[in-house]
Image (tube, rainbow, N blue to C red; front, side):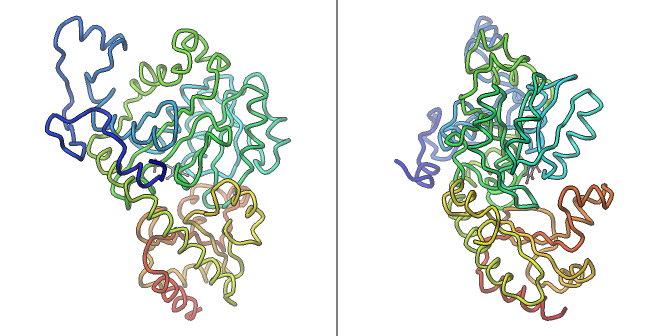
Length: 410
Ligand SMILES: *Cc1c(COP(=O)(O)O)cnc(C)c1O
């Protein structure tokens, strides 16, 4: 069994079902019984794998985690309540006061806000560099750096850094490399092959199967020696490669309480089965739309790594197996033109999400980034003339027709 989709449908159930159910039931139960007092003691000590309480683990969530683990060929996976929970739990596990993380200003807006507004007052410094310039990454790392963090296709700047080059640096400096791989998933990006240590994913996006539910994943590729990460060093001496998951499960994740719900894990396990097909279709649609828009007289610019004139085309081709994701940005003459065009659209939704089955459009400058000054927005590459299109799986012809009639009105 080699194909991603075959595997996602046919991976053996992690634990056999008493009734032989082919689909994992939703275990909507908070508490689980133990056979003896000794058993419950061993469960609490983490010495006997079993479920006790659903904030800590749940059979339906575990099934989802195990599927992701097999599909991404990872060491261990923890499913959490959202993509933001995956990021915050991981950073809180690795870093703390008087330490720093190295990242880029090309970040998902809430991630930037987490670093700048939530974690900074607790003493965590964030160093911003250009991920397209590996020397800057190397120079920013010092003895207090606890992680390098980047998105593999930045949303909405569409920057694609050469991750193999960055992982060479982080490996040499013995600092874990964390990638937010939400927009590619393990279907397009085999993070382990590029030296990534931890991959974080918002399963709200492609994995959920069409925006059915919120969720997040922490994927440990098992290729970092946690003895080199000061907060994990002691645990690494006891648990070896399991140190990150041990600290999460016995401390940070348990105490933060951002657990995945059994129902959402069920929906997302189902979503996984059709994910490869849906990603293929949305990538094809996005490339078709990007080609159309780049020929259109009223479109000032199109930014999509699938276009051969994108500065990131070659590296994206190498990293993502010849597919380029389901998001593009387009620039029109002015902000007014962007608003006018958006308001004319009949099929495409004015909404904020990505990797949905439905195509969506948003003006990031006035929405996702509205809390920042114009100067800060420009620093993050959020131009007032830019629209982000997250392309779904509709028939391409219908999408092109909607764009055409909207652009005709300008
Ligand atoms: C949506 C998104 C997140 C946050 O995920 P939620 O599930 O909404 O918390 C993080 N990173 C990227 C790249 C995203 O697109």
